[in-house]
Image (cartoon, rainbow, N blue to C red; front, top):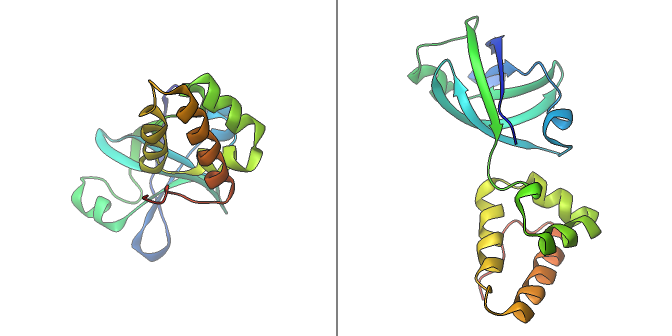
Length: 156
């Protein structure tokens, strides 16, 4: 997934937060998802967040503590670079990608998960490299859990 760079003006948001307007459609740039988890930089300062649609279009919400600790504020024009975080569907092994493609609910839920949860599922599946029979069982279990909206595999 490619980074997208742009210049924008930080706007005031609700509850002491700020809003970074995003001048492109992330669904077109990175593929359709309910939530786009991103990382990158704002005015050279590292930031993580979610690109979401709000009343004014696409935006990243910035918390009050991030604003307090940085040398930028509401009304400032800033350079922004954003890239999707974590493993994306295009990065997955073909067997897992095919299973997620076959179950739309599971695939959409996987895409909307934060990278922590995606990586947790992938580590559990990848731990079976020497046992293809177990790998297939785990992929089926992960697809079932994702389709049911379970963020994290229950510990055995």
